[in-house]
Image 1 (cartoon, rainbow, N blue to C red):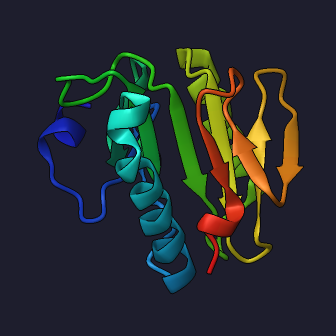
Image 2 (cartoon, one colour):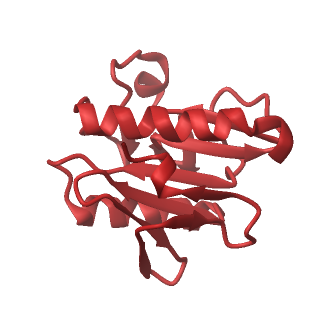
Length: 159
């Protein structure tokens, strides 16, 4: 873990139980959706009292670090590596991604205490709201956090 924490990976990698895991992205659709999601949250940061971060290291367990594509923190934080659960973690699927990989990431976020997890699928032009019970609810129009504090119309994310 010490080597992981002192090494700069470009792009950054997850660290799971002693193994450095690469992440799939770099495709136009993935990048576009990530930029659109970031822009949407960033434009509303003062109104919603949030901070938004791309590809931020989140220590979900003592021996696990995940890198969500986008994460949102209520209020703010000064943590360099997040150990406090973000309010929302967003994962964006790439063509090579397997759903089993996402389910493991989602489980890690919920185990840490993240209350809201979304998976956005650019190829299918839809998104999924995950629940701590392991369910994925498909959406094609609107994503909303469990307390409805944040809402994102998918028409604002997909071109």
